[in-house]
Length: 369
Image 1: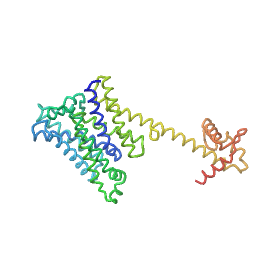
Image 2: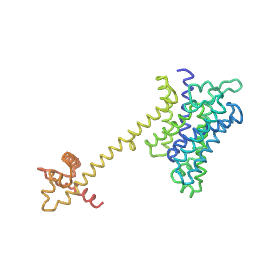
Image 3: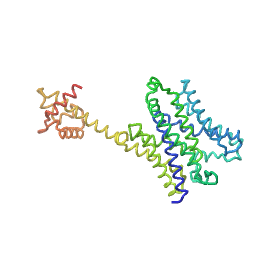
Image 4: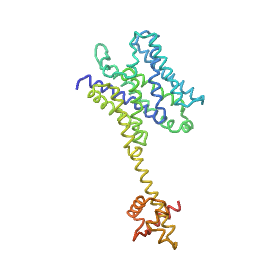
């Protein structure tokens, strides 16, 4: 493995973890689209800052992008607070407008400058190792790795310091206010972290991968865990897995690294969506099937209890009569009777069903409930 390959993977891993930490709270707050809005609208901040300083190498471009990210949040909140449109609609109105303005400005006034819209969207991690961080003639590695490492450090420190406030404000804003926290301040603090993270990752990985790494790993972790701390940790691990597996998929296919990483993140989410232990589609289907059989058995034992002491019990409590009395099909009836018998709820003799002591108690509890 070459040094460049190691550096690309290191940049991707650090970026994935840095994006996953604030992304977990975006998913919980149902604001996933905000990452898309910020990662696109910051292009306008870059363009406007370029018009001021006249060079694409100035750090003021990063400052302009970060400010525009916060402007995006403010505009979305202001539009949503009018109650004329929902927050999702407000996001969908604001960021396409800001991004489109940036594209028009580039095409009209900066056509000869290296502000490539395609590179902005897709990014190119393969080029990240060429931009070095050099101090006094010493090459300290890729500049993107240092930038994203610093942002990751800020996100970790911010999460450690304000974990309780973020947790309470995310799940119960009213309780946060009652405890003396400011939900608005926490919200804008989180949006600031999202904005800075998106700006830092913007140059190396592009806006598409920023969104993929900020939302897909936390969304996957949400399907796998019910605890916030576990979800945050899983988000980071899934982001790392997406980065490494995506790099080698791109190497194998000779394809876009950013696109491959986003694809792996989507595949991991799809697997969790299908096979997660509690929230997966397969688990939910099995749970519904189990509940269906359990409910049918309860109906059966209650039916038998209801007719147990009646003169027509010998007729009503026969397997053949259940299809008419409970309006069950033959195969379904046989399956329910078989399951109830295996649980020890009923016994069967010559087609006549009788409750066991266990079944009678179960029927009485079900009837009382």
